[in-house]
Image (cartoon, rainbow, N blue to C red; front, side, top):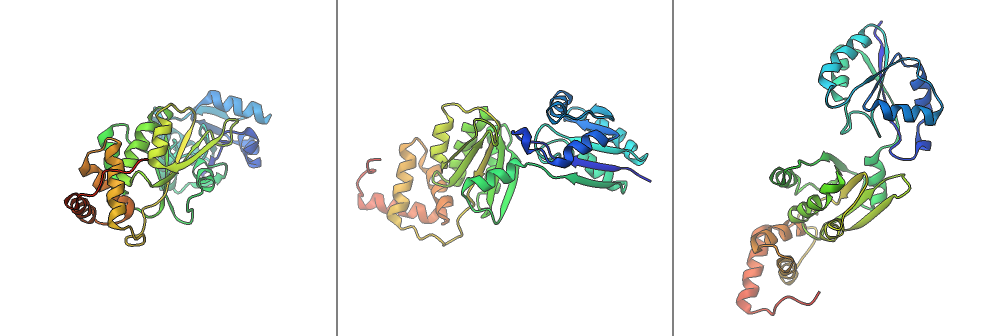
Length: 288
């Protein structure tokens, strides 16, 4: 008989959110694979449990090498519990390789469901949650980040991202550039913790706020693209939006592209509106 791989969700902040089954699994597992063994020790102490099984580290740096070892333990009948620092293993955390390898060997995989930063942020965002996409972490390099964002510029489902606090301002600025400055979003910080904060507003506004410095664990929720033709925006409004972005320092070409995405209209339509306004001698940008 083969063993069982158990993926266990752990609290994303408040320890009292730990699912009741977690304590039992921590006590009964033959092997506990932990992303950080020191954090596991703090977790077991907080829950008042003492693991009887062997504890091993399982993190990004040793995931490839340790997966075969754990699969052999499972094949020999062991109950292996996988826990990461917060939330559900394999969701932007170690675990996918082990699950895939266990499935390949026809080893049973089950889960102890627990807190999720993705679902918590969605619920708190105030944005549509009936359909959504989880995009994980964006690339660190600016060019690659913009490229990834452009891939989903027309995605109508709500988008969810994880981000490091020191990159948040650059990420929000890139989102404003690609999705449009007025696209709605929510930055969820330190969820379930003492200093929990949910900041909602247009992407450009959130980017300006983040430029002042933000700390903590970050989840960003972004409104999906509007349905093409669902929002009637007249030419004067398109021109106004372009001028606002130009005033903020954007080049006209980029401003036109961003406004077109946000309004759900072709870039040519925005370009023609700007040219027509210039030809007609429309007054300069209004006061903001």
